[in-house]
Length: 376
Image 1 (cartoon, one colour):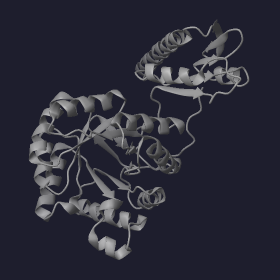
Image 2: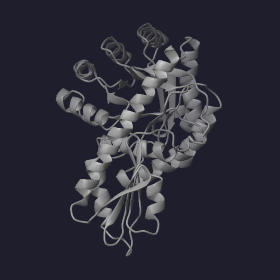
Image 3: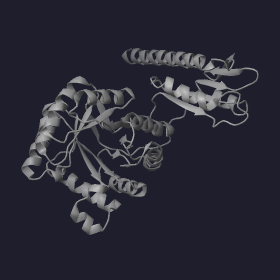
């Protein structure tokens, strides 16, 4: 039995983004955003699907114009994953995508303009059961807040967020989530910690404009890791200057490392050294690429020698331990059979896929027993 996460999550209200629950006791959801031209429907649909295939629970699409809103209508009709429309300033776009089946509106009520426009958007959202995401960014704080604080600060981010929250509160609308993002890790972390004490709505975590694939991954892992360890966070987006699919992969790896979410294979692999009996790095590169489609939660250990190999393999669903003259494969923690270095990656892939299928069969059997027990 693998240990559950020791993290005690902050108690938040739950909202519904399409078929995905956010907040409350729902799993922390992972989302990403398209970077295609929204009016290029075919390209955007293809990217939404790729993001969803990578495991994303929610996908955000920028809708900057009425033309883009019409494109959103076509996109919505061709994909099943919940969609968030990213809108700034123009309340008419929000009304249009609400009509076209959007699952969440990312629009800051304080930036819409007159109260009658805000009221129109809230009425439409309430009528159609669409939540709103308030998104505050250190790079786009209001001029008065810039003057008040002199520079972006955690306090400035929270004050900006609370202004938007107060508008929704005045209209008795509570189905919203909030983000207070900054590219500076400590500022973002402090802002989220402050905000978590002031509202009970779900929090959307992210280190905005985090950087490229490597640097942005590290920065996001550090910042989100601190918050998640505090129990703060109900949905996450990793902001990378990279393929959005990579954002999803990184998001799940962060959650898996904290035992907050399971999705696919958790690899345990040694960095390799002169003791290795096979090419560990090449093996890992091949396995990660080949097994991206597996969504079954499972541990796979790939260790190059017999020093740490047996110990790690006994704790994994499938383990490979380097040894002489043949490597040893463990299945469900037990030594199962030996394999030579020649073409063993193909064989190991088959063993892992079979173990994943067995785990799915066992999971289905347990669920069936629970159903029968509850109906007895």
